[in-house]
Amino acid sequence: MLTHSLITLFFGALAVSATGLNDTTVGKVRGRMLAIIAHSWEYGTATEALLELEEADVSVYGEKPFPPCRTVSADSPVISLAEYVLSIKEPGTLPLMTDGAAGDPASMGVAVLLANQTLHNATYAEAAGQQLDFLLNYVPRAPNGAISHRVSEAQLWNDFVYMGPPFIAYYGALTYNITLLLEAKKQVGLYREVLRDTNSTVTTLWQHIRLGSWEEPSHWGTGNAWAAAGAARVLQTMAKSHHARRLQGDMWELVGWINEILSASWVWQEPGKCLPDHPDLQDFEECAWTTLLAAATYRMAVLTGDETYISNASTAFDYIETQINEAGTLTKVVDPFNWSTPGTESPEGQAFVLLLQAAWRDYVAWKQSGRRPTLLDIQW
Ligand SMILES: *[C@@H]1O[C@H](CO)[C@@H](O)[C@H](O)[C@H]1NC(C)=O
Ligand SMILES: *[C@@H]1O[C@H](CO)[C@@H](O)[C@H](O)[C@H]1NC(C)=O
Ligand SMILES: *[C@@H]1O[C@H](CO)[C@@H](O)[C@H](O)[C@H]1NC(C)=O
Ligand SMILES: *[C@@H]1O[C@H](CO)[C@@H](O)[C@H](O)[C@H]1NC(C)=O
Ligand SMILES: *[C@@H]1O[C@H](CO)[C@@H](O)[C@H](O)[C@H]1NC(C)=O
Ligand SMILES: *[C@@H]1O[C@H](CO)[C@@H](O)[C@H](O)[C@H]1NC(C)=O
Ligand SMILES: *[C@@H]1O[C@H](CO)[C@@H](O)[C@H](O)[C@H]1NC(C)=O
Figure 1 (cartoon, rainbow, N blue to C red):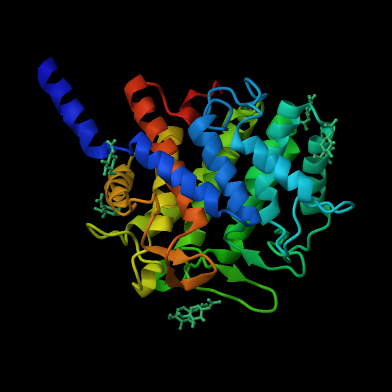
Figure 2 (figure 1 turned 60 degrees about the vertical axis):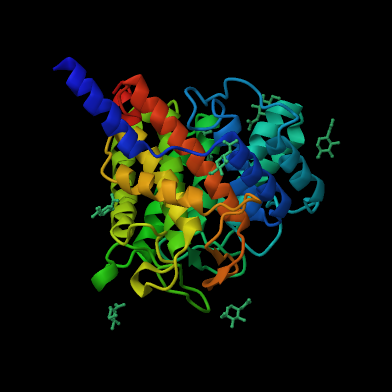
């Protein structure tokens, strides 16, 4: 009896766990990522991927990230990228980088806050504080109060959810500021209010860009994955903060919002394929967003214990592994600058692979530990 159930458990676990990437592949993907990142959100996503993969205990998915259990080594590219961003920061400006986007530069904020501690240099804390001030007090707002993704006008892009709110939440958790944690969650909700499409066949997928002088209302896959993964990181940050007990209702509301995206997305999965770039258009197979969606799916399982979409994520991961070429490039990706066109490689897609590897690794470790899901493990 016992042996039988152990065997079932063992093979059952194998069936849903994917195999993960070996170190050689991870190294190549990482190298290619560092070689081609060049924009604010690519730096931000790459540093988050390196944190989750290589400094896992310090990342928000670590055991005790607030305050960080140790400083990140000055040798880490997480710190070098923060140093680089500070070295080119325009004097007298508030955002960490100046590129027309309000949200994207904020994605470097977590790395800059960690560099403050590694380098004992208050310029870094000051720059992170200025970035926060910029988002909260200077960037235009949509009529519902959502912070714009653009500097020049109020315009909401679903990408914002991965760039702005996780930084606001991180700053809040680090400085024991519950107002900021609540603001991060509120912003996710305000974006959902405008972007979630309640119309017809794609119910609960989010639109890409709304409001402002032009719109791009398609259900772009990558944007949906940005939203799910960004909201999951806000949730994780709340769960690991000193205020977790007081945030219970807000955290479960986030769970509901994230699950809407997971279910509306995975339903389009076909065997032996990545999801389409635009699910409802069935245009072309796109592995970058499939990768980030799978990462968010593993993270959510550990947070809530709900493993509904694990087989989707694991099937996807096994396939994604076969789409990484000899050079370590994830193939079958959209051109990140041309949302309806296949590209040859994607800086953010490279980072998504590392995020997926880290999320899968932590999911497998959680399964083996027999621990309760993160949200159920908080002492209410
Ligand atoms: C690593 O995995 C790839 C496939 O993902 C395989 O081609 C390669 O041979 C493996 N390398 C090692 C050293 O196991
Ligand atoms: C910046 O680092 C110093 C230690 O060097 C620490 O006391 C301070 O709280 C940090 N600031 C932030 C905002 O994390
Ligand atoms: C702190 O960092 C800033 C920005 O990179 C740099 O200009 C400054 O020289 C640093 N200060 C010290 C004491 O290293
Ligand atoms: C929390 O952060 C907000 C926004 O930066 C600030 O206005 C407020 O004073 C902070 N609260 C505490 C208790 O530090
Ligand atoms: C809902 O979808 C239908 C069919 O695609 C379209 O004609 C209609 O304009 C949409 N309504 C809204 C409010 O977007
Ligand atoms: C993916 O998810 C959909 C919707 O939950 C489900 O119908 C389908 O069977 C799943 N596919 C796999 C491989 O788990
Ligand atoms: C985007 O792709 C379309 C279709 O392939 C092409 O016509 C257009 O020139 C591309 N735009 C950019 C900015 O690359």
